[in-house]
Image (cartoon, rainbow, N blue to C red; front, side):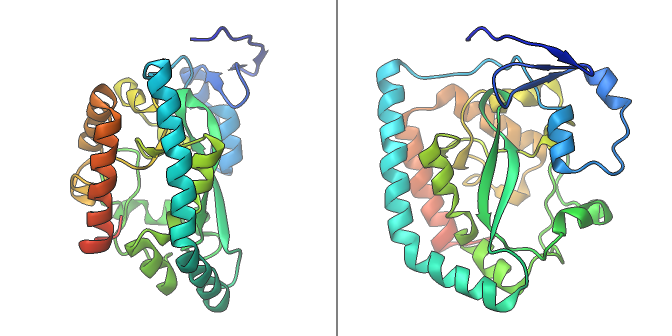
Length: 255
């Protein structure tokens, strides 16, 4: 693990750019009523999380696979992406693309890109829907979320809304396969053992997506992520990508 420098500001210690350390007890005492996602980012993301990499040669080859796969994905999905952009602009007021702060490898922060599938201001409405959450733990899943637009439901069913994340793969924030990147406010509620899922780059797809999706509770979801981290290989990544294609396009169930 690389050495980091730190300074202290209001109980927060900054390491490398985008990585934040915080005193959890002190953070719990902070008022959160009107905090934006950016406020939460400044106040908390986990630090001192060891990262897991393959051998240098394997890691370089995996990066090459990510780049080639992302370029191929963008080319293959370009027609669907253009149609989706047009449909969003014609049917729902607001921006076409949606950028959201997520937590990546080692607790580093990055902007994840998606097509917008919800009404504008949907984030501010989540607290009102929390009682309808269909998954245990810090994550939020609601199959019939009223914030999702009609076009958004179609895009989510076939995961077209996630096509812009190929750009995140090209930038190196994400891989084709890995744990899904959580929100900072979700990570804030993690138990210590949950943090293991941040030991590798997050991915477009992963073992959870092809192993039950919304039928799994959060702890089962994390255990699958940890199993992937322990067993990961290029061959396993290929199998997960092939299974993802089957889940999304042959038996789509809307992630």
